[in-house]
Image (tube, rainbow, N blue to C red; front, side):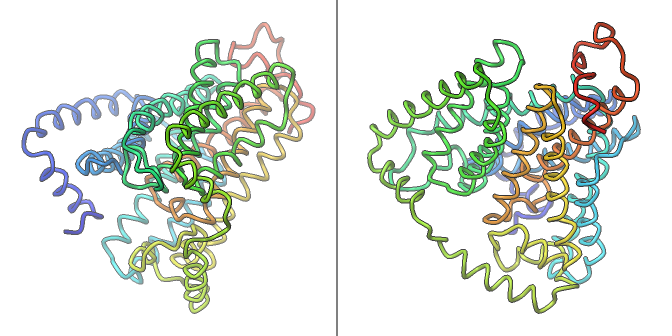
Length: 439
């Protein structure tokens, strides 16, 4: 049975859980509709992020239910556009251009139903859903709340990962409570820079302690997993945050590094076979067959470089293990330019903000956004997850675009109308710092 489409997933879900779930599912639907009517976008986003942590769960009904619930929440957040929308930023709009190409080329796709689902969901997350999120991210405080949702979701990820360590089969990749090791590691790789940012920021002592342990736990899980793409992406994402250390942050960095090393040594002392496996995984340059797949994909792209084969076309052939080749194959050269260009634009704008901004809190936030973008770009060369319309990779790209755009707008507002700091709200008390260097 094909469980990739909506009807297939619904059938698989109800067959897996039975009729007993009908009443709870109905109650959940009522709650979600209530949150939608009340315009509670942050609550809906919190549920969306929670569902992301169960993507690919070992219990198939939970994994399928997580996907279906994510799709539903995407539509519900889109429905909240009636309360107002704002531009999610040029990068998000470029990604939406890629989705539009997918919609236009639907008749060319090998599977029309898959193309409708894939391109339709990509358009929803990059345009109306992104615009609704941008509208509810109106202040610095809102940006902090959005990032704290990631930190809470990271706690669930770490709990699921650590609790399933006893089930690890020595000498194999570790996927936590999921059956999809690449997605599991990529999720951790995107959560790691955010948890490190939380440990280094002024979010309150309780939050910082939580983030210190969260950073250590996620780093430990990634190393043990033996999954290179997500792990390297996560550590690449942390580099911009580690590039600027004061005495306090240097001390914190030493503590985090020490905790991570001790945790890894202790766990590997209990699992010597896994230690050898991880060492082999991270010290060899083998592409595990990817080089051949990339050459074949490149050859197919060059046969129709401008037009492409339609949205979802690559899924028929199997994963290309490269998001950019996937975007080229499905959307043609225009699709590649829009998709890849979105991340280039994000990185350049974030780098500009890092170079020009002086205030420490804004600078750390800019470094976090740059780190997340670099992590996504790096992972995109080895995995196709970035082009999936409802997983954590593309969602994080949209969030980064929204935060970057809203942050730029907020900074410009305060730059044009500087006021005494005592008259600024608490979440913007630093807004007058360094504005003559940012316009």
